[in-house]
Image (cartoon, rainbow, N blue to C red; front, side, top):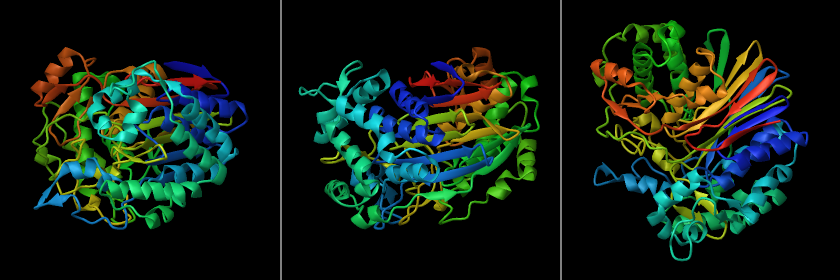
Length: 540
């Protein structure tokens, strides 16, 4: 859904969340206030994808000082975590990192959103929480995406009484689109946070409930883990694309570095002349993705624990060398891109995560991505709080070269360690031109976030598409391992056939991820929410 405005714009994965952000703008709040209100609201109305039991990244551009800041409130491994905690008899057991207590990392959402508001917002925590509390207390009509997530996970929801009470009817049937969903326990939890601040989440009764529920499900998060959690302010990454500056998230997000590496590889080509989604353009894009995703697997991890050689990876000499290795008419053997090969050959699935983009009348911009990882996270609920807890421990590498739920592989740089943050594909982006924020975007969908974000960015900047066209256009994805080039049905059959002739294993998938965009042009704001997941942009 497209929207236009002059005073402000919010694009998110739910119309009610976008409306919450616009209301804050109309009351005099800035883009940061609106982003925090939208994020808390989307945690309520999109609970399969995100929640206060998860975490995320926020990229902020401050118009007056022409300065960007990056906030990392990614979840952390508990102190009792260990390198081989998901290994049994020498082999990784995927289910251990995806469901149950061991899958839960220490949540960062509440601390992160409160930190952003405290440093750069103008409204109180209580005021920006009002919409979320109202949606949880009074209820809202379930929309198609949430209804589908409930239906697809109905067996797992039935096995968890706390989830079943919220998302299923008394006879065990799923709540359907159009039906009212109320979350009174979550409303009470959010009200306590509004009254007492983030300490109400990380200490006291709520924290004790979280720890008890995780322990009952076999996990190891402690009261000390919660009390010690701190978000981290980090230096954003910067890259150039033509005359624009691309600002993005540094590790432990892999998305920013991978996206900038892709742009660097493509930076010497006249993409417009090649033609949008022509066989040559699509092949070149896929090859650049393979090189960058191979580097992701080899080098990326939590920068507080490992050295990520971003300067070398993003150096023009490196990206030029990688471009020179790309053949115009054939793809290469996977070993030509990297060494951490996976045997998993399923395409990624859009399990979770949620993105929102905001701009205000002063020129401030926010791109914020938040997640509990896969649908309904770990399927563990902090009993009397309504908090669905994440399964972010699956974003670590349980063993070198063993794929996670998204088919992504990694090595020791992303191994489990106490207090470490798992690698993420979340890719919040803000693009500036001559000091003005002109584009804010990001997405959901695991590794599809990275490919989707780079393609929408190129659609807007190189092919001149408005927000709606840039978001709705068909996309491709190649994450190197598995060796599959995924394409959406909108990619022309002739292009798919050409790619197959070039040696790509082409696999058509119904849809890939969801990107949310706000764009500033000629003094007006243009926003679009990705129809692949619903949602809405709302302008003022």
